[in-house]
Amino acid sequence: MAREGVRFEQAFTCQPVCGPARASLQTGKYPTEVGCHTNHRMLPLDEKTIAHHFSEHGYEVGYIGKWHLASTGPLLGPDDFRVEPVPPERRGGYKDYWLASDVLEFTSHSYDGHMFDGAMQRRDFPEGRYRVDVHTDWVLEYLQTRTGEKPFFLFVSYIEPHHQNDHNHYEGPHSSKERFKDFVAPGDLVGTGRESSRGDWHEEFPDYLGCIHSLDENLGRIRAELERLGLAKDTLVIYTSDHGSHFRTRNAEYKRSCHDGCIRIPMVACGPGFSGGNVIDDLVSLIDLPPTLLAAAGITPPDTMRGHALQELVDGTAQDWPEEVFLQISESHCGRAIRTRRWKYSVCAPDKTGQDADSDLYVEDFLYDLEDDPHERRNLVTSPAHTEIRRELAAILIRRMVEAGEAEPVIHPKHT
Image (cartoon, rainbow, N blue to C red; front, side, top):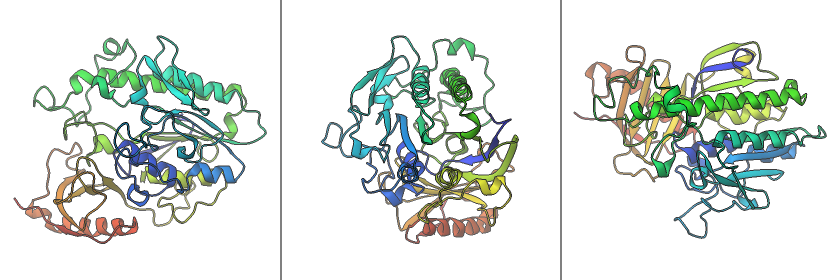
């Protein structure tokens, strides 16, 4: 797919948490703008999503998989749909086809579980079939109902390679532990884990690779079905993720930090407007996908969308493309960060919790020189030699926060 399409080598999430990243993917806004800055915050019912835009322009819109934007409030409360079917008004405009769970890891495991269809009826996985395979079976089933009378937009949201919460384990196909036991460890993980008592990648990485291998195979099944149905040449397929994983090497769990292990994501586009095997090295963000999708359909993205259509990089028409990506970080702490080609700069609100949306005061938390330290081992946030670069990066970060609709904050240096 990358050889035939376009690969975005430097792609990053705009929020390394499931629900907030998905809110951005659906609206083109930053999570704080729509009130979805942490998990389990419902996408506002009056929020206009990409599904609404496509519907207005004659598309059928469908959604299959994990949603994570329907529930709010306490577990088992009146607004909790984490294990219940999502009612139509909480589906973000996906009105034509729906087969999903709000939080798929709550209604399934790797080899058992269910989703709910558009009539809110439970649909169980066939016994003994791996979750990615079942998910794809249902995607192919949907594609086979396309008559060609109307164009379609389908959002396919796998949970893999997310870990299985209640099992505290990444769950690849049964053969994963043996098949991928001789993996080569990524550089940012080397020297952590068993050697340092932090991180669980030694045990979990084979299953993580098993999840990804299954995704690769099943993406191939989807592309082959599009080809068989005569839809491939007119269909744009984009492959990406809401976040990555640092395998508990940066904090007590897998994401919610500024480090590349959890913010750098895959992004490959293949289809009309994205061909030729090009590799784009400009920094791009998940926030850029909503305007990209609309532009691919000839729909003018609204001014409320914060990103930029990736077609501008592909066809060479981009002007003043951002030299950094901006991130909001929540749940572990109330944080903000920017990532340039060379620098990673992150700040944390000292008097706020990870549930707070924003702050008027932040303290510098991390600075990495990615040219000299690509695996982010040496935090330069208190280095006297980097005082000026931190000042410059703070000014850029503040500008990006204001552009995202936040009040202009004060950033203090971190004292040793």
